[in-house]
Structures are given as structure tokens and as C-alpha cells.
Image (cartoon, rainbow, N blue to C red; front, side, top):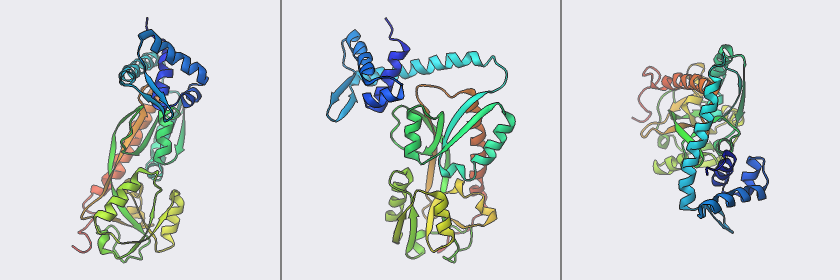
Length: 314
């Protein structure tokens, strides 16, 4: 006899959360009820799905295998349900999207304006946060999708590359380097750099880049507040490194001095993540397509040969 969809959803929640308590909260169930459902499945087939110990709940090889098939079942069931909705006229409903400041500063507003003009009957909710928070919210099913830097932990998630964007130096011009001139950070002397906290996926790549390329760092300020970071850079001798797609509008407005990193360049992969157990709704797919188009347009500005020149020190 096949397990019920409720059994499967509870199993998937325990697998992805690695906790009976967290799975119960996610699925609006009790911890004892979740445990009972898991024991029922284990008893039916005579196989352990999880190893329970002081370190938490870890799936067995059987649990890993069962999870992969359960994801397919849940996704197919959701797709079948939504196929019926395709017969209704127009897009409607509600979508919840998670975006980092990287995406909200330049790409979000024009994409959102276009989408809302085309589909006024769809309610769009945007959550701005950094990658660690957004990843957990997508995994818990609180967001339809999110855009985050590429990372390794894909349990409970389906992901694909959305854009590859260059990292750029942002300053107020005190370095006496022309706007949009590619730079080698090692040639700029000792820098005072604002960086994101360790929870941000980009932090490690920035530290690796600094140490591998002889970049001299005098002081480091950890700040997970993008507006505050930009205000600090604008009014002081602190600098920061940000994804190019986020600073694309400043190529022309010149509110900041922007310099692509060169010799070597540094790039960040931005990925789409969504819950593995369910497909995107038609409304979410449509908004994602508009957001991706806007991101591509902004990102292509960095490939325009008229905007960059030979690096400083070359």
C-alpha cells in the first residue's frame, strides 16, 4: 500500500530540517505526530530511515534513496494540481520571492513594475535578506524562490545558474583612479574594506581573493547593511567590493566611482533556488522570467567595451 501524501510530506520535512521538532513546526504538526508517521513508514517496510542520536537526526542510506523518490512524487502531485489551473483565465494568486540587496538595488524595481503592469491580479511579496536566511526560508517553503550566490548545500532545493556577474570596487573617488578603469587591488596600497559577515556566501570568496592576490588590507569592517555600507563608502575613505549587477546603474550616474577588478577578475555566480518538492507556480515562473531579463540587461553593461579600459598599472 502506498504511503499518503501527508506521510511523504512529513518525511521530507524531517529529512530537510534534520529535526523532528523543526519538521513539526514547518508542517503544522506535533513532534509526536511526526515521529508516529515516520515510525509507520519504517514499520511497514522494516527499514530505518533516520539514525537518531545526541547529534541530531541523520538520514540512513535508505532514507537518502526514499527522499529522492518522495521529491518526485510531491513535485508531480503539485504539477498535476496546477495543470488544472491553466484552464483559468489570466494569472492570479500570490507569490513570495526572496532577494538579496544585490538584486533589489537595480534589478527588482523595473522587473516588478513590468510584471505588475502585465498581471495586476497577482500579489507579489518581496523579502530582502542575505543568502543564509533566504536559503532556509526557501527550504522551509516560505518563499516560492530566491536568488542567492552559488553555494554547496542543496538539500531540499532545486537550483540553476541565473547570472554570472563581475565583482567591482566601489569608492568615493579618493583613490584617484578614473571611473570604470579596471584595477588590480594589489596596486592601490593599503585599503580599508567593508565586507559582509561570515554568513554571507561572498565573504569567503573575497577573503580568498585578497590573500591570493597580495591585496593589502589595513582595516576590515563587517557590515550586513547595504544602504549603510554605501553611505559609509560615499562619505569616507572606506571601500567595498560588490557584485556588478548591483552597481550597473552607477556606470552612468557616477554616484560612486566604480572599478572592475582585473588581473585577476573576480566573478560571482547568482543562482535561482526553489523548494525541490514543488514546481514554481505560473505566476512565479512569469515573474522570474521578467526578473531574469532585467538582470541580464544590467549584467551586459559590464561586457560593453566602451565602458572599460586597460587596468591601472598595466
